Image (cartoon, rainbow, N blue to C red):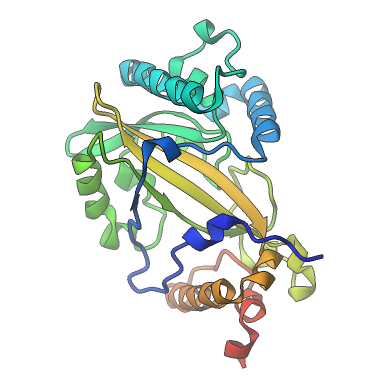
Length: 285
C-alpha cells in the first residue's frame, strides 16, 4: 500500500559531504515554534507513562537550572494557551520541577542549555524520546562533549556551534532538522545504535526500515539568557519515498558518500548496505 509522504521530507538537508556537517538553521517565527500534530494524544500518553515508570531516566535537572526552568515553563505555557487553549496535561504542576511540568505540555523534548566559560552545558532536560543516547550520560556536559561521538563534529562544527549559541538573539529563534535511519518506530530508544546487521538482510525487509527526523529549535530566554533546545521527533517508513523519487535519489547520494567516508575510517554504517540501491537503483548499476 502506498504511503503518503509527510511534509517534513521537503525540509531535509540532503547534501552529500564533505563537509559532512552543517548548522542548517532557518529563521523561526514564534507562532510556529512548537508542533501539535495527529500524534499528540498517543505521544502525550507515552510521555506520561515514561515519566511515571522511568522518571529518573527521562528527566533530570542540575542545581543551576532552577530560574531558567521557571522561565521555560512560563514561555511554554503561554504559547500553548495562545494557540491551543488551557493545557490539559498539567496535573499537580505545583509538585513538579518547572521544566518537568513544561515537558508535559508539549510533544517536544526540552533541553536547557546554560552558558559556561565560552560554551553551553546541558543543565536540565525532559527527554522522553531519545535517539540512541541517555540523558545522564550528557547532563552537565558542554556542547562539544555532548557531540563528541559524532563523526567530524570537532573539526567541522564545534566552534561554529559555540559561536552561534553565543550570538543567538531573543527575537531571532531558529529551527533545523536532522535525519537518521532506524530499524524500528519506537520513540523511546536510548540504545542500541543501528548497524548494518540490525536491519533486514535484503530489500525484502524494506517495510522494517524507518526514517526518523528531529525538528530542533533554539530559543534564547530573555531574562536568564539560557538557550532552550526543543526536539520534535517525526517518523515515516522509508517506503513513503516511493512517491518522492527526487528525495529518494538525493538521500541515496548522501548515504553512498557516508558509506565511503565511514569505510575509510573503518566504522560501521548505521543503515542497511542495500538501502542506497533501493532508493536509487539506476545509480547503483
